[in-house]
Image 1: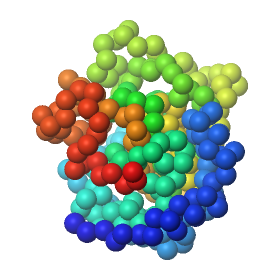
Image 2 (image 1 turned 135 degrees about the vertical axis):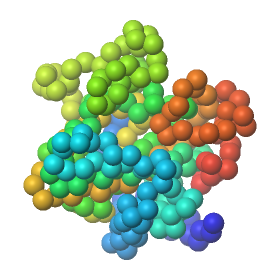
Image 3 (image 1 turned 90 degrees about the vertical axis):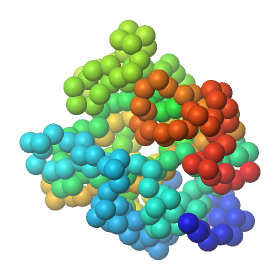
Length: 282
């Protein structure tokens, strides 16, 4: 497994030129922000190459997340950066880690994992409102997810967020298909409000996206997405990073994604210092 060592100073400078203090403050305040045209056309093409290779040869973690009667198809896969050369180059040779450092306000940046999300044309399956962090095996406030489409995404089909929801509380994670409580005992966490029935009551934000743009959000920020309309395809690659205060939180259940054997190497409360999570800045 090899990666090219990029010019870190040049990557850092690109972030400084594209991401101003107001954007960083927006991320801290709202738990979500849009980044415009940080990625070059070549970098987007590299990511597209990785996505198509992933779709052609899914990992054992790949899954179809739409119903059998859906006219489209929603496909997900996880944790492929070490085996997918294009993913690896995209993560390690673009300014993503430097951007994560700036937005998180963290001295260090570790890669957590990658996540492919593809909605084929006509997919009706919504991604319901949820927080990500309750599905994970980590605790801490310095974290970031980057949702990076390689196709244009309309405002109607984009990822939406409830601004400020990253400040808590943790809400009950539920299965996306049947709404059953997942892992935490029923009643042990506050339930998610019915956001779709009263959208006007919530500070919902979202942005149309062109290739080269992407959105960044905190792992506790409530978010959701619709299906995709007409002939449009929505191929998205998410990269997740951890900052200074992130610690291991082993669970008694299978997390999403799962990291088999990690609990044998890292005790509860330990920094995420493991080969699965390369240190990218710091």
